[in-house]
Amino acid sequence: MLDNVRQLRGDREWPWVGFDNYAQVLGDPFFRTVLRNTVLFATANVVLAMILGTLVGLLLNRLGKRMAAFVASCVLLAWATPALTGTIVWKWIFDDTSGLVTWLFNVLPDGLSQAVFRRSDWTGYGWFNSPLLFFSILTLVVVWQSFPFVAVSVLAGLKSVPGELHEAARVDGAGPWKVFWKITFPLLRPVFGILVVLSTIWDFKVFTQQFVLAGGTQDRPTFMLAIYSYAEAFSPPPKYGIGAAIAVLLTLILLLVTGLYVRMVLNQEEYA
Image (cartoon, rainbow, N blue to C red; front, side, top):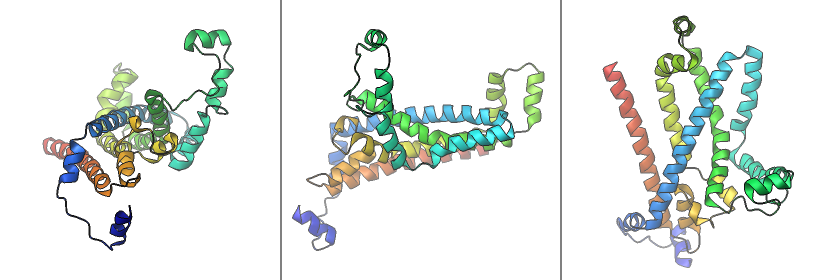
């Protein structure tokens, strides 16, 4: 531990290990588990945020000016709330003694609660103890904070679509679903592409929400790459080289995602 402190202060040189840290990380079965958790979590969150944000954007586009401004203001409150503050609120909502969710389940009729959930008293129930429940709550928190940006971006894109195209499609007998996929989506494809890339980057590096909900770095079965890097680097005994290697791998993955999107855009421009 003292050697690590000296190295951080610059009093002692760091030993050169080449690619040993990367080999150790990539050869660790737990890293593959963490990578799987990250990919599945990011995929689910991107899909849910895009669907919910698109639906809200379409709704805002159809509302009147005053109602749209009111709804947009309410929606943007979630996006404007700092991640730390919002996560603390959600953690209280799922508190096992005084949380809102625990109270709601406790007021259910005992017969109904017992028949459906096989439990009538929810006080003390660990909402964050199960990996599936933990990831479900974490997804709820992240999507709640991210979908407003998608909604506002989609709304901005919809304002640029000529209304005559939608009107002509409706005259031809096209329903809302067909209008969206045949007219709206193709015209807003660049917007959706950017939103998918940005959402993927944000969801791959989720840290604050997970750290707060899990209460630190003790819940290893729910680790994702960002918190895994932090835990390896700063949990005793600290392994700064391993933590840095994981962070670099995460950066490379995000660069790959961005590169694939840029290539896709360039191909579209080439064939346009």
